Image (cartoon, rainbow, N blue to C red; front, side, top):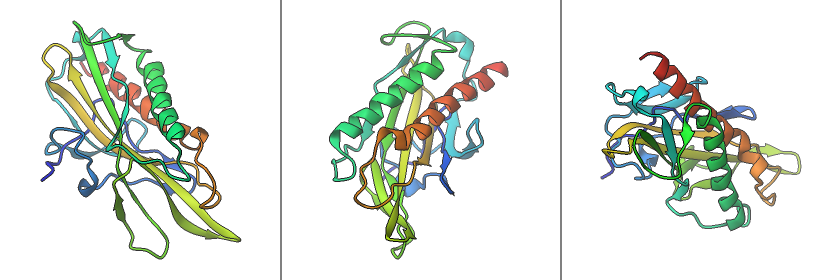
Length: 224
């Protein structure tokens, strides 16, 4: 049985896109990437998006001068589809890593690996739910990224894209968890079920998650 916990001190939360705002990830959709979900509580990201999050109340951010961002991964491992190619999946994790380095590097020196005074960020893109018109409201899909038909349009159906993340923040010396977060967001809708997903369709979501991490870090540090 999966224990409910997850959320991060820097808050990777949900972005609202094209006409539809993302809700919190339901506990039934937790991927198992995080070791413990039991302390997660509903919260808002730095930009006001709904997330599930836990932050160690005794965390002392002044101890950290560097950040090591582990390469992001899909969890569980997804299978490419006609809409989402294997190359696109790699592009998504690669861009997410770039966005995280860009944002968190504004506050901390970027480290090449764990070490003294180093905060570890461990991100994953995880399973999400889809909402399809004419089908049951929510259907759990064991794939990190999906395109789901949601709106009927003249000559075809728009395809809504949803993506979710789980992330943990750890102390490099002790490997203790400092914060965890779970959130999801919606990418740009595709015109129909034949359109291929591009990186531009999800860039705003990934940029928003990384930006919220930085803003949450700055807000938390300002309180100490």
